[in-house]
Picture 1 (cartoon, rainbow, N blue to C red):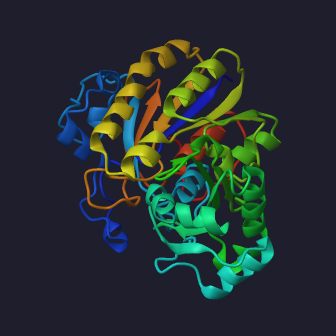
Picture 2 (tube, one colour):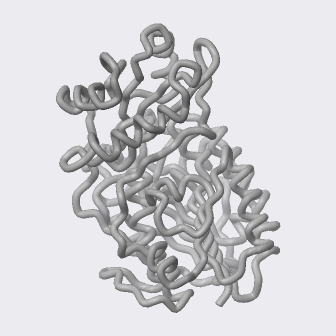
Picture 3 (cartoon, helix red, strand yellow):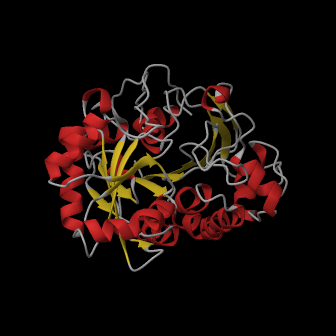
Length: 381
């Protein structure tokens, strides 16, 4: 047994799924459109076989890829990070987490206000995280009332200025919302604490963001490994998406650069371990903000790190690189998109085709560590 490294490039899709029209995502192709618009230079990804998955304007198909390649279809209902990561871990959601295109219902907001002791909330609409503090930040400072907002995803987000509501108290409010408010039919995928600071237009404290996820079903590969005494490591936001459950150790990160650094550091020390990494910049900083150049630069940053990552792999190690959903910065939508995600498995060379579920990764990770599992409808990569 060696180490298995699973890297999720957040928001990296490779074309609309057959059911994309049900989500309003026809024509989305995150990677294809970014390469077309920016000429994104990814020579190390090209060697692995990224250009063999779908035609890409700036990444060529290679005759002898050094990784097995393919793409995966999401079968769970939804297109958010929690749903995507859970399916990668072997969980299929038949019912999507609830979303609130018109804001949260009055009774839910009232219960939250009474529970945390505030007069009212500000906003209560789907909103961009940067725009919402720009538009409501000053009123929040004057009144102390929290900014509550959502998005196209299943999230209950609470934004407060750190000088008005200390970050620790904001976390308490969000934990209350998770346990007492966002339950039953209102069980959103995530309650998210969004502290910010400074003066108008304000700065989000992204490194102090905290996600309070719904509790994942126990039959997921992270929990199975943990229960089998395989060491499990989270780098980035992964641990938040699994409600802090099933991980031996974790490292939060402020950026992809820090995530890559933490991965390289872990590769020098871990043994017989599962390392689950999320690189969020492509999604959070560039996909949602419709910034193709920034998205391309982020991919190129990881591409430059690939030789160092591959050099640290030992003979018995396994590296899997994929995405969790799409987030096309070349579109006119700031939301996630229902797309296939790319799949690269190193070492390897074969064409893995179109996988019928993200959960094929869970099966393969469990098999790698020789851990008993039951993931119906999934198959070994």
